[in-house]
Length: 181
Image 1 (cartoon, rainbow, N blue to C red):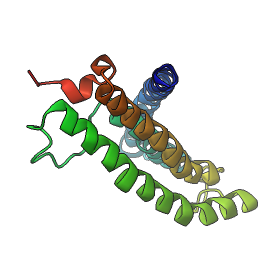
Image 2: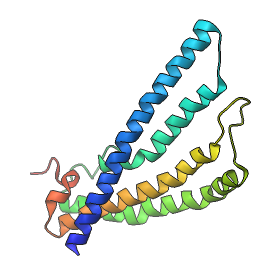
Image 3: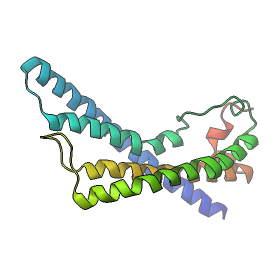
């Protein structure tokens, strides 16, 4: 059982890490496209709607699909009035309960409410609503479903790390033992 958890944690962490690094390049591309768009518009009076779509869509994809990377790095928003000072075992229990009672149900609700819109977008090959915009808006909408999948996987991996800590393997849960003595 412990071996399977360790393999799962390593695989999901590797996936989140690779995705995070890839998306970081996508966000750099978004900044470059935005910069070029501004220079063209204000410097030369030329505007391309597809460029505006491109940097907005790159940002959207980066922030939705990059959420798992942030969760892995413990860089997400946390109300830590009690959590920060808690002992590692208490943090582990909070991590497990938070994943099961808050994170996974929230992701399920997001999936259920997003699925119909994404399905329709794919059926109709939905593109930008802007004239001259990019085709393939269905791909961007699909990123919300991708968000649900990658964050659920990383949330389960974080919970698995907590289980490993409770089972005597704290080396797999440094985010829970950081700052403790």
